[in-house]
Length: 350
Image (tube, rainbow, N blue to C red; front, top):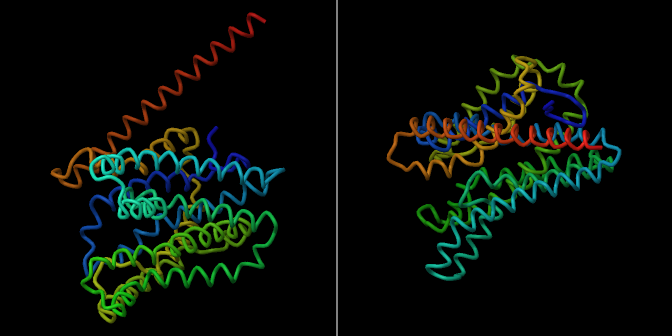
């Protein structure tokens, strides 16, 4: 049986649906939608970019349940963190082979190449979907340790305040660009990347996973939340934020906004309240498809080429990952059948 949280046996239909639809939404956003975000529609940016923060919140929610029901939560946290780091190392090897070895063979080691690789490790320059893994690992370790040693209330305000400051430093990067007189300077993108580091690691990593764990610890509060009540003010505030950024501050879109975080909380509560349809029996298949979509869509887009219309590329990528998923599932069934036959033969011999 496939559970969202194997240690508790708890299954959330909404989480399975979110992972499935979220991976497709991210692919559409990367390949298609982003080009349509103009001055009048930037509020879609704030709502659309809440998908990844929602993932962090839900991960924290499930992490608390896992730790809370383990006899040795510290050992479980250590093992889980090692698995995440191993996955990141594998993806970095792919980046090295595809991106850096060809550059190294043609031009050798240069300071620019070293800086770019460091940027890849920290921020995922070459493959944008990799950026979340190091912040995710850091957030998992720090938040997990705080809850294991019951220090979450002591550090609650510190985490909230530092997360707001870190987010503000990045969200208001056009202000720093103007203060530094670098409006038309190509090198400003490196400064913007530096501003992104505390936002990614502190706000998206530590704060969101910590918040997800806090929500999981106080599940009874979530049951009382009325989703419909919060939707109108969220829509109004998101539009107002985009209006102020563009019409008052005169920032050029697309720009991020603080409202993506309230939207992430809204989506998290909404997702956890979904009870149907029960997709538990299809959990492995859907999870495999989700992982493939999330990690492969940019590589597959480059493989397909740039001449096809974005909608055609999106459809082709979905079909490609459906085929790969079916192949993986079929291969797993064949292996499981062979193991069962071997075990039965061994039992017969004994």
